[in-house]
Length: 134
Image (cartoon, rainbow, N blue to C red; front, top):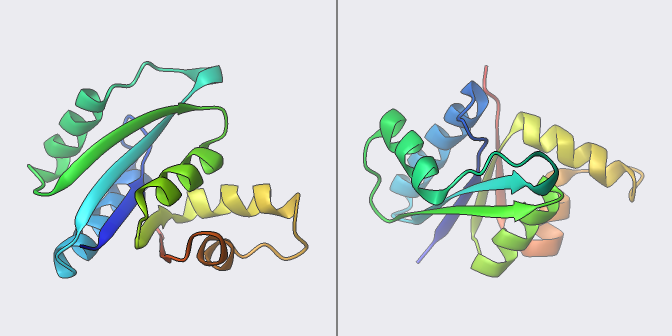
């Protein structure tokens, strides 16, 4: 079965809501499972729980079938997302344009011409969908 992973902020920002809305649409269209993923940073922890994330998403979008909610602690958001996507064997990753911008800045440290989609495809062999919130 196809798996869609969508990293989001908590509490849900307007950008996270737009990204999540697209991920839900993609998951429904492809009859896929959905993983809603949040990274709770060690250095700026808010003690986010899986239950709190699930409640926030369901408050906005209602109950979502075949959806898993994951909260991981980490130092770098981008690294935690890559690890989750690889560990789950995701087929599709839906990221917000703000997240893509942060990944570009991170990749600039290692590459001359960072292209987030190409990097993820090369590292993870998955489809990357970038969502603009405007």
